Picture 1 (cartoon, rainbow, N blue to C red):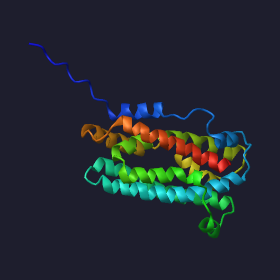
Picture 2 (picture 1 turned 90 degrees about the vertical axis):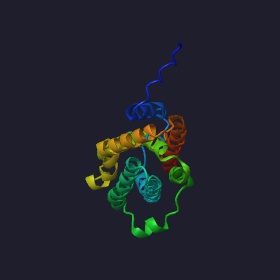
Picture 3 (picture 1 turned 30 degrees about the vertical axis):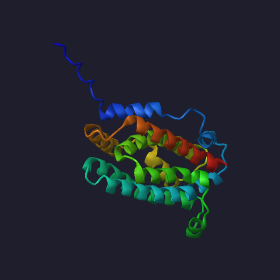
Picture 4 (picture 1 turned 60 degrees about the horizontal axis):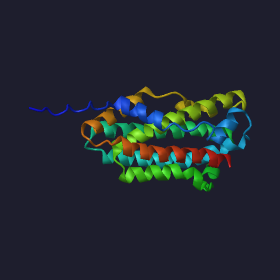
Length: 226
């Protein structure tokens, strides 16, 4: 009697996430602003623009993550991941205040600022994913994006100290993301593993989400540079 071929081994969450990070890494040199900051060639004014734009991004992303957590309410591992991200945005907003203060920004400056469309494409797409993306797939896409974002923040934090003489309080926002968060990484693995086990995660779809997130990430930085 002929035997059916055994099922192929199912990928682990760690393997799926590692593959997404490798496959979606941005091309070197595409982030014009980070390259200029690293060389000390960007004007100091870009940090004020960054802070003003990030104030909008953080507020929007926090709402998106909260919505994803609610959508995943029946899947605790997935909901916990997005709940952790939402709480992280609250911490990030507090750290951003140090940069805003160092740039001389007032509450009125922040309230009356008119954001640049290219800078707000990322949170707009994140909101779209929050409304209709499979949460486990969004977790994969975000993990790849966080790897790129963290790398950019590490470069900027170092340059702020070496080229721009910003105080520690001003660098705190970038320092928050410069090193990978073990807690976020663990929650991401748990969320994606649940998605794989329940067949709710589709890595190909997640890569499509991630490719656009990375493109909008670069658009953010380059729009600040412009």
